Image (cartoon, rainbow, N blue to C red):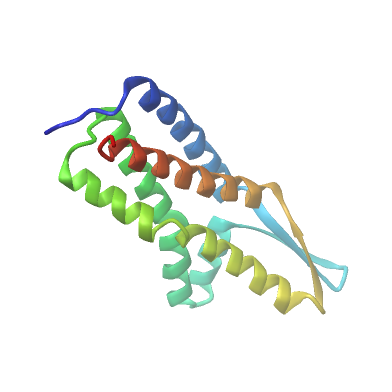
Amino acid sequence: MQRLLPATEARWLLILLMLTCGLLITGLIMPVMTITSLVFFSDSFSVLLGVYQLWQEGHIFLFFLVGIFSIILPFAKLAILLHILMTRQAGLMSTKKLLHLMHDYGRWAMLDVMVVAVLIVTVKLGAIASVEVHAGLYMFGLAVLLIMFITHRVVRLTQPYK
């Protein structure tokens, strides 16, 4: 039986999803940190610039790992959630499988990669450089949390009433 998501809740989640998309794009473009070494040299990095530099320096595995989990998967999740909320289709088996996969296995992917990357940089450079965190990291983190929240709400709305 085909069920539709409640229109009011779908509308609010759609608005929140658009906000999340803006936060994600901003978080990927804005600097997430500035590394200052020996007081004279300073570099600011965004997620996109960091991924590009991984490619430039030949760290292909890390390029794909961070690129997939921090850039491609978030936009794939946004696209799936947008499709579900626009059509309000809750009962399709393919929709339920995608949501289950997103909810159960993908919830930590983006956040883990970013936190691990920031920790690695901070620990490795702690003695020879200082790391200053910028708003891009907070926007990216907030976008990740909102994607997790929206996914959770859509999953709850697609489950049968008890």
